[in-house]
Image 1 (cartoon, rainbow, N blue to C red):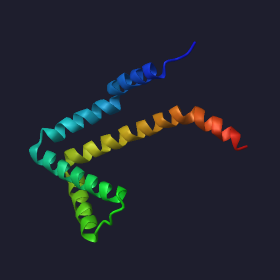
Image 2 (cartoon, rainbow, N blue to C red):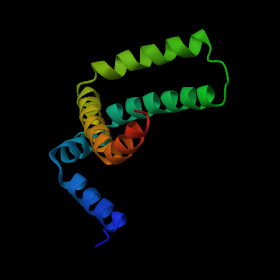
Image 3 (cartoon, helix red, strand yellow):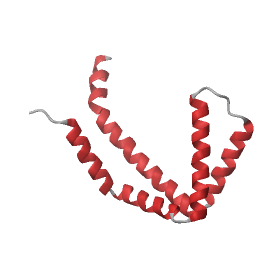
Image 4 (cartoon, rainbow, N blue to C red):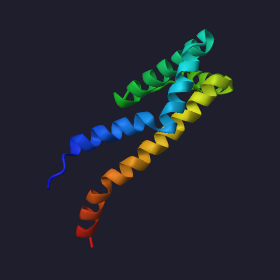
Length: 117
C-alpha cells in the first residue's frame, strides 16, 4: 500500500499548529505586534536582517557601519522583554523544525550512507 507523502505532510502541518512550541510562538508574536514600540523595533530589526542577508546572497560587501548598526539593533531588541521572549520561542520552534528535518531525511541518509561503505 503506497502512502501519500503529501497527506502525511498536511497532517504534520496540522500537528505543528497544535504544538506547544507553535502556540507559544504565536502568542509571543501577537504580544509583540500588539505593543506598538515593540512591533516597530522588531520590524526594524527584521528589515536590517533581511537587507544584510540579501546583500550577502547577492555577493555585495557589507560595510562595517552596517555590521555595527545590526549589532546595536540586535542588542536593543534582546533587551526588550517581549521581543526577547519571541526570539526564544522562535529558537525553540527552529529546533523542532531541525529535528523534524533530521527524521524526514533519515531514509536518504541511510540509503546514501550505505553506498559509501
